[in-house]
Image (cartoon, rainbow, N blue to C red; front, top):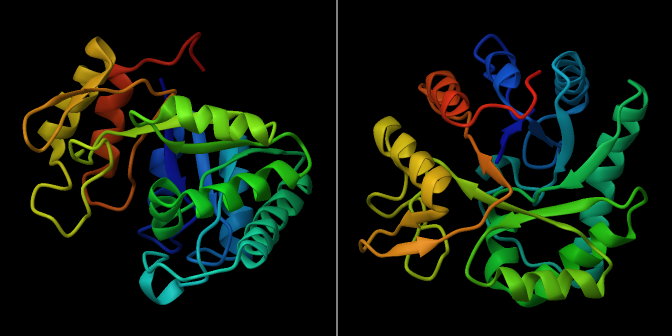
Length: 244
């Protein structure tokens, strides 16, 4: 599995991007709506270029007050425009550094809404399919993966299936809401989940059920004090193919 991380969401002396970028393969860069901004985007792109990390756009709802974690109703046309606006901004800035955006990973509430609401998922797929460059869409690896492939095929869209090191799954294959007890794993449990994914392509749900998960990429979160330590440990468990 490739390692990905949501970046470009913080700035200042405590920004984790500099210490995380060397450990990952894919950088999901915020596009200024839920977090980030022009200068942060520019700096994060430059950092990705320095470490030869593949670039993805990380659009979310226009909700900086809640870090994009509040669901905001949109019509299909509004949602398509919202995604186009954000991806175009990052793509334009990437071009100025001789870089290219290759995929889209929705952020926060938009990601969660896409996974549970087929109308929103269709709008997201439509938006990504209409963008130039044959971009892929990153979404959660669940038991419904085959259905999601069929939906994406109708849009001529390739999917990147994602799983998480530090998030607990429910029996339905969805992530437990963050406010629920045990929804976010500590360092030791996150590494145990990575080992299980690597060795058995499965996770153990909150109820103890073993759930098959076939993923292309593993998300490493950078929004906690142990982020660098966890990223390094996961990189040791999942070495890069061919090195870098």
